[in-house]
Length: 204
Image (cartoon, rainbow, N blue to C red; front, side, top):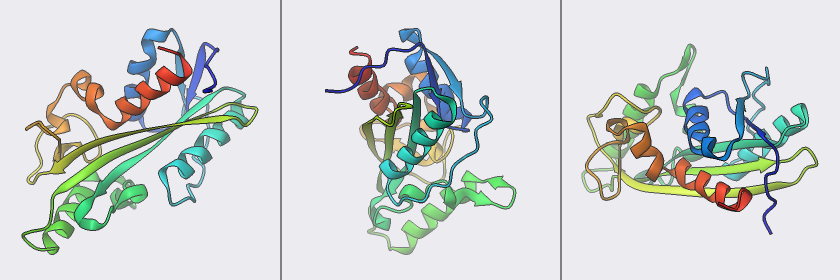
């Protein structure tokens, strides 16, 4: 039986403004105020696991213990079939530079590595999101969402973040960066995981 969320304040354990905004928008109808890790001056814990769920658990439990609030953490990324699932949990690492994250560089690397596999390499990929909500007493619940699609080059669209400008969701001809925020939230990996979280923890 999934534990129900009974408070009115939820800490989202992320410093990523895009993720915080997406999750806040989806949870807003339930009357829960959302606060981000940056507002609480929380450090980003080292993500030492090699799975999405492992890293999400690290972040959620660290935030819950530090604040005494239920904490929702997201670990997400893109898995590319031609690259045996890479970059996966290292999705953000591919964008790291000495001066912050450069997702244009990361997308170019992904495209180059697919091209290196030859003209017949599949361009299918999946955005994956694992959510963990942890309570201060150590209990947690896990929810997962997947959005299948394919990668295009050159990139298209100016909205979204991360790898959105090169990712076309299955059955559509727009990239995630060409969609409105509401359109993307309805079908995104994070939207699907948050929907499961709401159904499990809010009973809605």
